[in-house]
Image 1: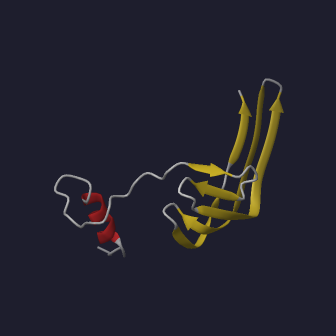
Image 2: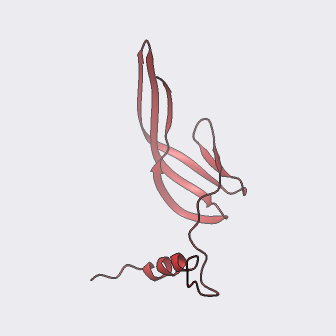
Length: 104
């Protein structure tokens, strides 16, 4: 079986919050705190003040207006920089942001 780098740390983190957790073990992986998004999807800001900046490089977009039903969808793909929640620096990140307005 192939070893995955960092797998031990993930296992230890999961054990730190369950029965038999060891004193001094790393904290368990937690849910991300609330965030807010820029209207133009250029940043994501966490309640602790950390912020990710997004630079779109390509975009998928579709708009439909079918009288009773309507949809305006955009999904830009690009790069992230800044800090993750907890002010953890992000060296380099690629991903997708998404915005969807719909009338059903």
